[in-house]
Length: 90
Picture 1 (cartoon, rainbow, N blue to C red):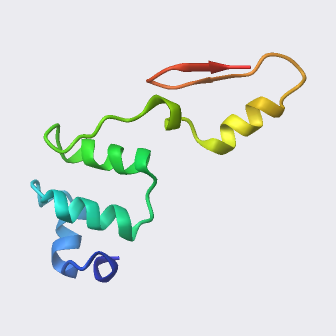
Picture 2: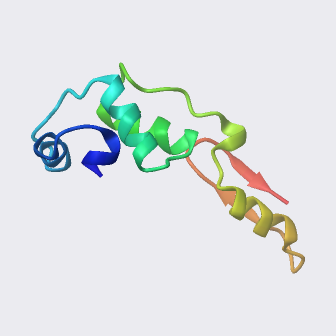
């Protein structure tokens, strides 16, 4: 993964182990790209680093698309998806 993010394996190991506390925004974005994270997942990763890097998570994309499709296809009764941002129902 370190190679895909263009960072040293030692630095990546320190990040994984929590020994590196202040990765730059470029490193966080490189890791997000290397991991193929969605915008919501990238926002969450940035929020783990600290409030300075946190990006707002858009509520319309905060729920996994698969869950929304599953909820919309549910016909046996009401369906709800609840997360820390909102409640979705069908």
